[in-house]
Length: 558
Image 1 (cartoon, rainbow, N blue to C red):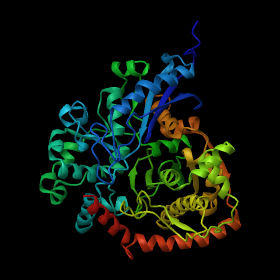
Image 2: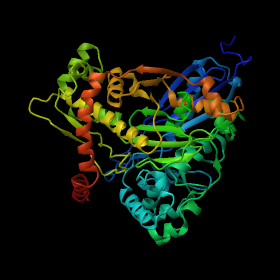
Image 3: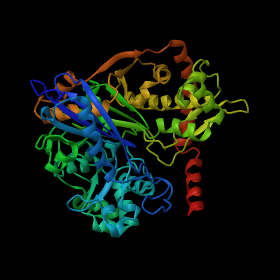
């Protein structure tokens, strides 16, 4: 006799979260958002940021590539495993939704075949996925920004005045200029968030979220042919020929599950496949953050800050404001930090002595837990350090991938755990800079909700509460983006009328888990003032040394 949960009156959906290193599938009950089971599948090729896996060839600085077949492997492995672990009868599953890191782009043929899968292009880096943290298109982004500012392009203020090197047009221009054969061969320049929906449903639909935030689609229009031609005479048709396509609204169905994808996943053919979305944006309804002023910070390798508002304003350095970009009927704002968990991981991997790892093992702790324990009882400012959180560049509010990290105040007595704590604090200062910039622009943050893997560190969360001088709520789900994708799947399947309705029933949040300590907050105010001085000195042109060093590095490696 089967142990599967029968269809009965209950129905279920599957949410799939495609992260930087792995994909995660979660089976969720539609009536209340209960997460019944999950499964993870690591990408075989991970992130290619030093060498190309197919040839071993060295990649230039600032590149970050992936192999698209790794994403399909998640469908073939994580989804069946989660379904089996849940005990749910597949017949009771009514929809599937996905989210992706963004902006993650790949060149494909008219039928969706990635160009790296063509034998003649397997050794060409530009034929592969350009991951969100591919920053090698910074020169192209600089030219886009300079020309848009000079021409007073109306869409530029919607992105805080600057377009990122991570986004569709900068990466597309880099492809056009560096490998025109690949550019001319591709039929579509596709967000991975939309490509994976194409694989599930057989239908290519652009999602309104990435089109608006990453693809410079504002008020139904892309940058003009005239503007793009001014960047490069052969680039004028880029938007029309390579990017423009049908736009799907968030929570709508892009199509239904194909027979091929049903065989991969074990899900029923014909169920609803929700329009694609971004990991940060789907986390908002998962945290019941669908009202104006509720900012959700999805804290992982990077942090993305998203918030709804009923007001349209220009926020310096924001990553975009899109009508309906998070939920229908409100303006969705986005900001972010390019490196957060990545910074902590880099520091531990490259800067922490072996004796600390030995001590952590002896104590039965991870190295991150051990460093936290060593540093958490030191008084605020006791390490004498302040750091800039720009090891992956600055996404908001400076929008400059050429900036780099630094630690000020180190002496011969500075210990590794002190620098580790200073890096924690630096990321909190970066978030405060974003929150203050939104407030100064007329869209104040009324509630700060943290999601993502880093919320598992209570000390880090308390630092954020103290630095922000705000209570921190936390999402009550271990898999916020996957839950958010499941919520969108439920709406696409017709179980709820809107994403906001589904969020109220299926979302989960713990209110004001961390409350600021006044004395610690006062001490952090003084350190934040020092951070702000360094932020403006290195980031606003007073000292351009970080840009100069990046140039020297590129020339030396070339």
